[in-house]
Image (cartoon, rainbow over all chains, first blue to last red; front, side, top):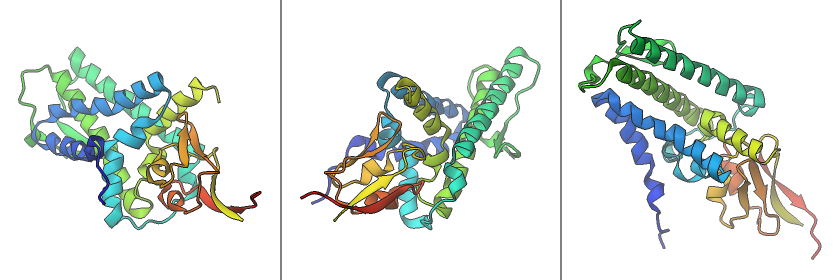
Length: 190
Length: 66
C-alpha cells in the first residue's frame, strides 16, 4: 500500500521553482527570506526544529536527488565539528551583513546597482538577462541580487556535498539549522 | 541481547533526518537540540544510522532484562 503523502512532502518543488524564477526576474529572490524567517519563528515560538524535518524544501530536494546521485559516503569528522559549524555560521552571517551593507550603499546613493550574481562569494556571473523590470527602487533590486547569490551559493555547496557524502550533508552545516539549534539550546538552557 | 541505536548528543546537528526514516518512531529530536532514542521502541534496524548526514548514530548490542 502506498503511503499517503502530505502536502509538505512536495515543498522541494518550491525550492526548484525559487531557483528557476531567479532566471526570469531577480525580484523573486525576496521570497527566499521565507526560508530564513519561518525556521527562526518556529524555533523561537515553538522551541523545536520542525522546519528542518518537515518543511525544508531544500533538504527534501537533496534527499530526492541524493537517492540517485549521492555516493553515500560517511562525511569527514571536521564537517560536523562545532568549530566548522559555528565558523560557517559566522562566515555566512558576515557575508550576509556585507550584502546588507551593499544594499544600504545603493539605498544611500553611494553606489550604483550592480547586476551580478556572485557565486561562492568570489565568482561574478553577469545576470542582466534576468533583469529587474519592475518599478521598484534600486536598493530593492540590489538586495534581490545579493540574496539570490546567497541562495545559489548555498545550494551549490549543498549539491556538491550531497554528491560526495550523504544526501543531506548540507543539513549538518546549514547556517539556519545551526542557528535554530542554538535558539533551542538557549531556550532550554543546555 | 538487543540491538539499539545510540548516538553522541554532543555531535548531533538535530536535522531530524533520523526521525523521518524511523519505522518505529523511536527516535525524535528532543526540543530541537539533539536526537533521542526511545530504547524500548527501538528495534536496532539501523535505518537512522544510514540516513544520518553526520554519521553519528551507531547500532549497539545491549543486555536487556527479559
